[in-house]
Image 1: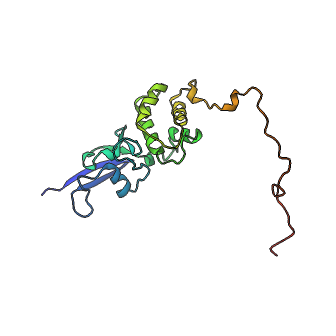
Image 2: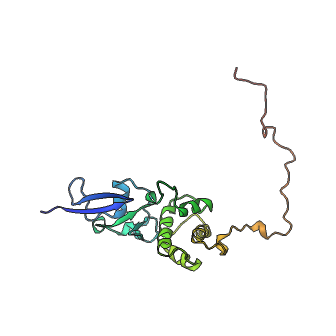
Image 3: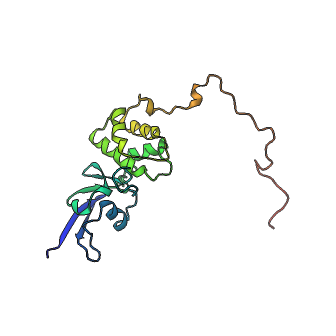
Amino acid sequence: MKKQYVTMTINGREYRFSIGTGYGEVPPSETLSETLRKRLQLTGSKESCSEGACGCCTVLMDNRGVTSCMLLTCECDGKNIVTIEGLEDPVTGLDPLQQAFIDEYAFQCGYCTPGIIMAAKSLLISNPHPTEEEIKEAMSGNYCRCISQYTVLRAINRVAGNGEDHTAVMHRANDDVVDPIPVRQELFPSPFANGFDNGNTLD
C-alpha cells in the first residue's frame, strides 16, 4: 500500500505528516486543531465547542480565517497555515492588531482572544479598512463569555483607521457628569500607608 503524506506550511515552516493508523502517523479523522495543539504544541488556538460555533480555534489558511476544529488535517495538503503564534513578526514585533488588543484591553481571561484576533486579521487582510458594520458581521462567528464586545470592536476599528467611529474612542460614564463629586479624602490614614516602624528588627 502506497503511503500518503500531507505537506503544510505552518507559521513559515514546512511540515510533512504521514497519514495512517500506525504509530506516529496522523489518523484520517484527526482535525487540524488536534494536529496543531497536540503534535506541534501550538496551543494558542483553543478547543471549545468542536462544532465550529465559538471561533476559539480560528487560524488563517491561505490568509482566510477557518475554524480548525472543523477541518481534517488530511484535507490541508499544500495549505499555508498561520496561528496566533506566527502572527508576530520576528523583526518588527507584535502585529498591529495584537498591539491594539493590548492597548484597548480587548481581552479578559484570554481563552477566546487568539481566535478573535485571527478572525479579525482575516478580515483586515481581505478588507484593510472595513466599516463598523463590516467588522461586526465578520466577528459574529466568535463568541466570548467574559468581555464586552465593544472593546474588541474598538481595537479592530483602531487598526482599520476608523478614528471617527464612536467605538474607536474610549468613553467613560464620568465624562457625562457635569459636576462630578470628588473622591473623599481619607480622614484617618492607615499608619502602614507610608511604612511603619515598630522598633523590631531582624538583627
